[in-house]
Amino acid sequence: MSNDPVMLITGASSGIGEATARAAQKAGYRLVLSARSQDKLKQLQTDLGGSERVMIARCDVQSMEDQQSVVDNALATFGRIDAVFVNAGRGGEPGGFSGADPEVWKDMILTNIYGAGLTVQCCLPALRKSRGHLLLTGSAAGRVTIPGSMYSATKWAVSAIGYGVREELRGSGIRVTLVEPGMVDTPFFDESPANALKPDDIAQAVMYAVSQPPHVDVNEILVRPTPPLE
View 1: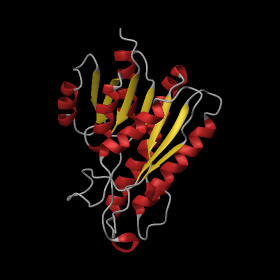
View 2: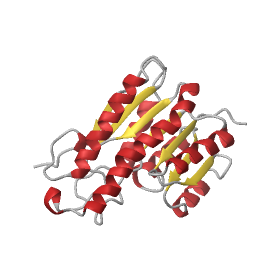
View 3: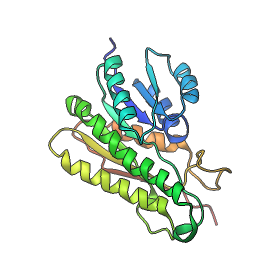
View 4: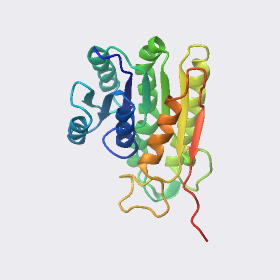
């Protein structure tokens, strides 16, 4: 069995997750890729080396059963997990606190917060064994006040998860990194936003963090697009 490190990525079928999978593959990682739909994952698996290098799994991050199954199968397939990128998430919709659809709120909160917590809980035993690296996709929106934004509130919560789990794990050898992008051109948007980051930009931030020597713990990476020229 290969001794190459293993990275697990949630929300891996598109956007930041897909870009990070491609960057990690180039860096020599074997991959465990999960998403709600397997169709895109199958193509990604083919692109990145096939089943010997890439395990794919349909996973609803709101399901503890799904999440634990991904981890169990990853350990059965590769024997270890060295890095976990808690990346699955979804955006909201217009309307603010006055008029947004509460069912959209519910799905977003359960995905962005509860789902992230489940990923952390399921993966920690494996990360303790490997003294690995836990990374979470936060957001610049989780550092500022955005009027009427429940999405922003969920990303404040992801920041809190990152801070809290880092303290829980102090002395374990596990590193914890919050990756906090500004506007990124991903499938969140129906039309590509102007002056936005690319998913590859965030993937490179992830790879910077995991490539540091064991004594270096990159706590947070805030990445914003350069303001346009005036």
